[in-house]
Amino acid sequence: MNKYFRFVIVFGIVCALFVFGPLIIPLPPLVGTRPVNELIYPDSQFEDIHQIRIHTIRAGKGEKLILLLHGFGASTYSWRKVMQSFSIYGTTIAYDRPAFGLTERLIPGEDLDFNPYTLDYQVELAAGLIEQQGREQAVLVGNSAGGTIAIGTALKYPEKVKALILVDAAVYGGSGAPEWIKPMLNLPQFDRLGPIFVRTIEDRGLEILKMAWSDPNKISDEDLENYQLPLKMEDWDRALWEYTKVNGDHHFSEKLGNLTVPVLIISGNDDQLIPVEYSMRLANEIPHAQLVIIPACGHVPQEECPEEFMSAVEEFLKQNP
Image 1 (spheres, helix red, strand yellow):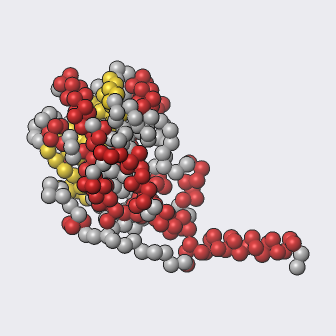
Image 2: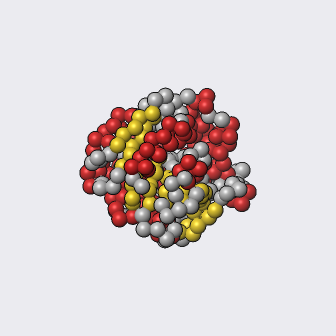
Image 3: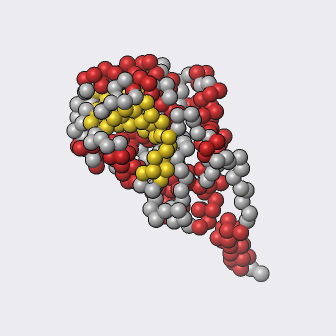
C-alpha cells in the first residue's frame, strides 16, 4: 500500500471519528441538579414573561421603577448589598437573565420556537418586564453584559428608559464565540459536545470571580456559595451552551451617539475584565454621560465597594428624579 492510500485511509478514519464519534460516544450526565424550589431564596418571586419563567427579587415601592441587570455568570445575588439602598428611590427589581441564576432553562427547538438567549430577545425581555409592572419607563442599571442589554433597550425603546447606569459595561470588543466559527457550532457534533465544554465553568468560574474583585480576599464563603448555586439548575449546561452560540459582537459602539437619556458610567479602577479605559471611552462617546471611577475596586463595585457605588448612584438619581 503506497503512502497516498495510507493517507486516505487515516484521513477517512479521522473524519469518521469527528463526524460520528460525538454522536455515538456516551457522554457523562449532568449530576448534582436539584428542583428549583430547593434553590430559591426566601424573597424569590417568579414572573412569566414572553413564555419564560423569570426569577426576580424585589425591594421598595413607588412610581419610579429601577431594573437591575447582572453580568455574565452572575445573578440577582450580585445586587443583594445595594437592593435596599436602591429601594429608597422606588420599586427595585433584580432579575436573572436567561441562562443564569434561577430563571427557567429552556432549549430552543425543544421547548420554544424562538431563542431566549439572543441579545434581541433579552432586550425584548427588559422592555416586557417594564410593561408587566404597568410602568411607562424604568431606570436600567446594568453591570458588565447587563450594561450591554441596558444600552440595547435604550436604543430600541428610548421611550421606556428614563436613565441608564452602566457599571463596568461590556461594550467594546467581541463577546461569545467568534463570528467565523458560529455556523459550525450548530452542527449536531458541537451541540452534543458543547454542554460538556461549558461545564468547565464549575472550576474556571471561581477563578473568573476572583479576577472580578480588586481584592479577592473580600470574597466571602457566602459569595462563593451563591455564585455556584445556579449550577444546580437542571439543564444549566445546555442553556449556557445555547447562550454561547448566539452571543457576539453587537456593534453598539457605532450607535452610542444616539443615546438621549441621562447616563451614569461607573467603573472600578482595577477592573481586570473590562479595563477602566473602556469605561472612559464609553463616557466620551455617549453624549453628556457622567463618569465615576471608584479606587481600589474591580469589576463588580456593587458587591466589592457598595458604599462608594451607592454614593455615586444616589447623586445621579437626585439629579434625575
